[in-house]
Length: 93
Image 1 (cartoon, rainbow, N blue to C red):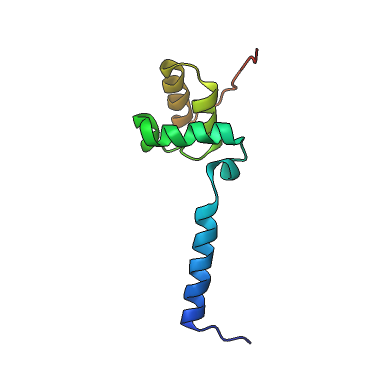
Image 2: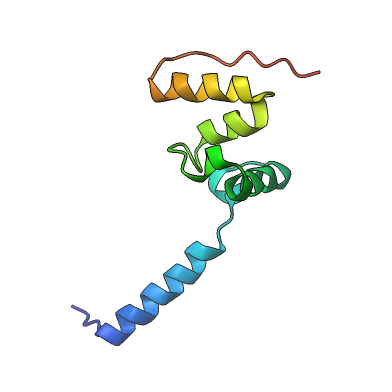
């Protein structure tokens, strides 16, 4: 049985926190850095994003990357909030 002292646990916690703080949006959501940068910018500037319940999820990615207008985003978010299942039919040109 190993004994761990409080100071050792505090150092371990601090090291874990440094590691966790270094993880970025692209890594968390497994998306390209360009998309992550767009999300990070929206998190800071877009009022709809600041307190969104879907922040840092793939729903967030769909909302900010796939939706082309504010109306689409509003509809998309309301459908998600009300747990209405649907498929995005995105045509890439």
